[in-house]
Image (cartoon, rainbow, N blue to C red; front, side, top):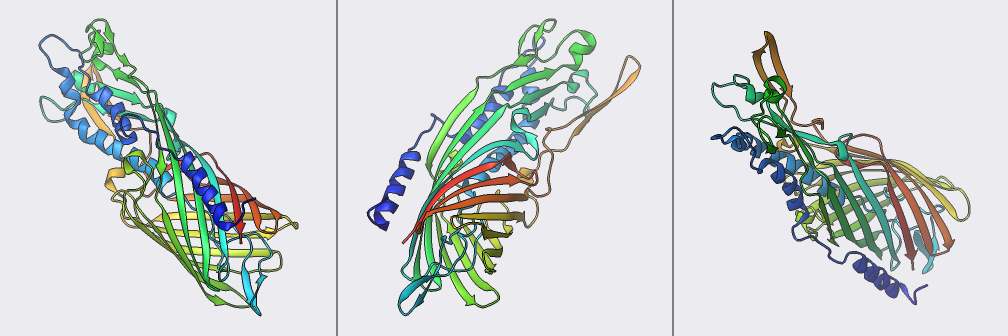
Amino acid sequence: MCANQWSCFVVLVVAAIAFGQPARAADDLAGEIESIFDAVLEIGLGGPPGTEHANHFRPDNVASSGRIITALKNFIGANTATFPLSSTSTGVTFEFSGGVPVATSASAGPIFADRARTIGRNRLSIGANYSYLGLSKIRGVKTADARFYFLHEDVGAPGMGDSPFEFDYIDLMIGMDVDASVFVVQGSYGLLDNLDVGVSIPFVRVSLYAAPLAQITSFTYNHSGMAYHYFGGTSEAPVLTLRPEPVDATASGVGDIALRAKYNFHRGSQTDLSIQSEVRLPTGREEDFLGSGATSIRTLLIASKELGNLAPHANIGFDYRGSDYDNNEIEVAVGYDQKISETITLALDWLGEYEVGDAIDELQFPKPTAVGPTVDEEQLIVQVVPSTNIPNFHHDNVVNSSIGIKYTPRDNVILMANLLVPLNDGGLRSDVIPTLGLEMYF
């Protein structure tokens, strides 16, 4: 092991820096997402001679695609910039009896929730953990299957459907895959018996891959054999499918650094109570989804109790998010950790993040649009075109279960393994988030 506590911390920081060495494509990742839509909406569409049919898809869809891009960028950034940090409680807390530190905790503590006890005056806890996020679903829809639909401009008489080519629309499947790795180095120090201060430094790597596919659904070609909009070919033999160049980009670097303090204001025979404050600084590059671009402040009230080897706990707090596209949240965590053997602790939690305030307009997709009615071969046709197959949620609340194990091979060393499992479909989510960690205290 390390020669002393400070050398251990230095080793962890050096390892984290090596993990987070900058790696970016020529453009930032946010720009790469924009390029997916530009490749389809900015292309020169074909049409009958003397027409400018490409422009008929641009005006009304610029605002629509801008809103979609904003939503996608927020969904990705919300995961990496606000990913929950592991507990500030070390595996063993201390009280001083006659000037000698005496261990007070029976279990090794929770993982993503927190307990009220502090680590004790002049005690130091350092650690590191690694989490992998395979961000595969947006509001329950697989990112690989997410589709967006872009309508023809309303031309001629007001109202869509008076001209047959107004029924044409572009169907874009983005085929997106987003992965993120978060490596966190953190430390907590006991300034007083009941006051801890700490810092958490995340190093984030985000990988974005997209293989977009665009398809023109041509009403005129299907009904009259002549296409008014196409990517290539001719009106009679149109190319209606476009595969833009795939996007494959990676970015990495320091995320949003967190400063934390916990004050244990009540220690009783029944329940321990603490208040914890956390400030996340905008140190991560927002354009690469490494940070939120704004300062956030989180305050928690923590209650916990030890019943032999069983330690239940509850956290409730408010998280102020400074970002324009991220609502403030009420956070709740309820669970327990239990020492099931001399070296093994089981940690179970229910974690909820509930947005407060009005839904953010930019994160809501446009409503479906009715095109028509029109009469074709004596049939009345009304076509309803959605903006996307991703549903609109009033709020993107996040609810997870946390299932973890802590292993204590030595008195001052704890190894941790955990799974975060989504319990709802809010936001951009992983099927499961594994976390591995190491903790040492001195």
